[in-house]
Amino acid sequence: MLQKTPPSPPVSDLAIPHAEGVSNDEFRAAMSRLAAGVVLVTAHDPDDGPRGEDVGMTATAFVSVSLDPPLVLVSLRNGSRMDDLLADVPVWAVSILGENQRHIAGRFAMKNRVSDRLLFADLPYTRGEESGAPLMGGALATLECRTESRVVAGDHTLVVGRVLTVDAGVAGGGPLAYYQGKYRSLS
Image (cartoon, rainbow, N blue to C red; front, side, top):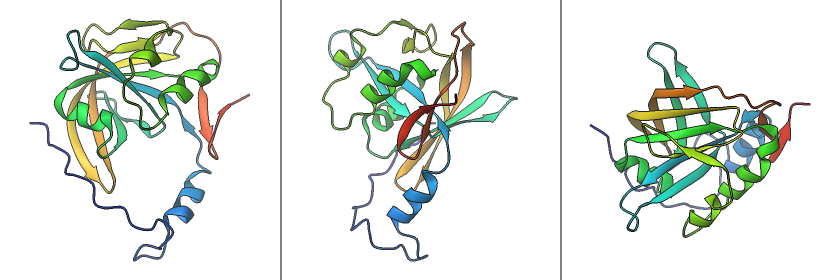
C-alpha cells in the first residue's frame, strides 16, 4: 500500500519569490535559525549487485510523531536515492548521531555520489535484525522502522515509519545539532 512519489516539478530560478511572496532564499535563511538534531537514515538495497548495497543519508528533518503506536517521520528530497529506495523497500533504520559523529554526518550529506559502499567501509556498525540496514556504532540511539505512509509535500516526501526496534545505546556525550548551516554541539 506504499504510494510512489511522483516526479519532482522542474526547478525554476530559486531567487524568484513564490506567489505568496517568500523566496526560497528567504525561507532557507529563516529556517536556518531552527536548530535540528542530526540522524543517519539507512536502508539495504537488495537489488543492487549480488549482495545488495547499503545506502545512507544525513537528515535533519526527523521527528517523533506518535507514542501509541510509535511513529517517526523523515523528510526526503523527491527523486533522491533514499526516496526512490524507500518507495520500494519498506524497512529502514535511523541512527541518532552524537556530537562526536560529525564526520559521519558530513560524509553522508555529499550529493551526487554514485555508490555508498566506500562511505560505510571504515565505520563501525551492526545490521538491524528487522531491516538489515546499518545501525551506526556509537550513536546515541538507533531505531528500525517500517514505512506506514508517504506524503508528497512540495519538493519532498514525508515518510512516516512505525518503529519496530529501539536501542538507546550506552554512548555518552550530547547530540549532534545543525544550526545556521553548520554542525554544532550543545556545549
